Image (cartoon, rainbow, N blue to C red):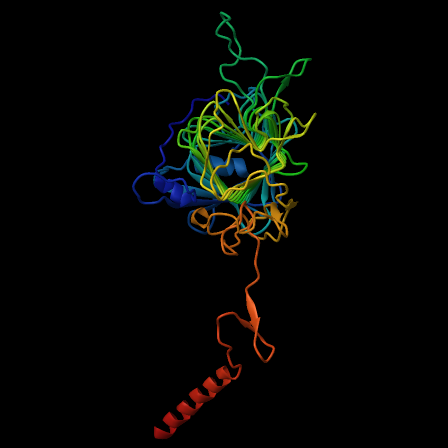
Length: 541
């Protein structure tokens, strides 16, 4: 897949709006319009190098295609990519197994040849199912495919898909690689069981004539992107970006078990990891963010992921800061630092539960729930820290927050925070430190039909109930339950539902407090009055 790259078209904010992405900059312009609709029918269309074009149906601008590769080839041929986008529609429950391997063997990091290997998108496109409310379509790598699933070099919206068995052998991005021109939006999808690996060699400038690879590989077990990425209502699990090289298990490279992002990253209403479903990497078991870009995470649960540093996320120099709101970071593991969050820049955390993360290192001062290294300020409000432990092979010391390097463990509290130790240095008068028991339940669904995320419920008597600050309280919790339910907002990602207040009338009927009882006969009397009025008018006429 080393053919000459086609000319790439720059995509404006309008493209993003047309394709459903929320990442938009600049002045509003005319959105792209739907061009061709490409239908790929069948339960398991066979993968093949495209030899014929898609067939026009009786419906204008609607084509049938033999397989997904042919549909993408048609979409790439879009003659007006600044005006229209293509829509590829897959049957619900269908499986699209990629089997046409790259004839060149090991694929180059950047590849644009859609005829073999991964599917290469070079023009604006959506890929979705016939009915996004029904079962997902699956795109998977076949046995011995040895390639990622998709390389995106334009704007792409992926909806209601399952991307699995991507085999990023000696490359970045096990399921998806987005180059610098890519703008990717993923919704209601599952990315699972993908990997990216390193070949164990790289160009060493100290060695004249060294012929290793020029770029580290093996990052982004599911997704590696150099462009903006938006993920919503999706699940990422069992993706890997950790390469073990040599007899001594030399672990050299692999960042971002699920996601490696170097541009703006937005995640909402999603689950990353899970019990028995860990994403794994050297740095950033779930997420690795670099490049000085922003990250926004809301209403998302990140749990049970594993790494050397940053079990849930490793954030490197976010110049514009990272923001986490209404989210749960729980039961992640790191051997060195930051089992939950490892960050060296500014971060804002609000109404988030960080609990039960485990750090193996016994080094004094390192944080398990939140670890700051080298620089940055953590601004926090209404955030709950509970049971984040360090030195898990020894003393099991409480380590909700901490630092490494030259960091000053700088925390700016906006109030309403709760910690089961004093490591977070919460100094606002509304904060609670050294709380003996936060009284939170285990990760569970907790009647969450909105996004399906697991959360930690607040148990009876929890000191987090009605102890947040209302001024910084979001309108809903992670489950989309309205806040506040009580006098003020609860601390953490979970808002305890309070039944409506009620009082009893003298007749024994329950009546909403502050409202006069309504006579059940009033509707009938009103109806009779209207009938009488109609009869009088009829007589006069």
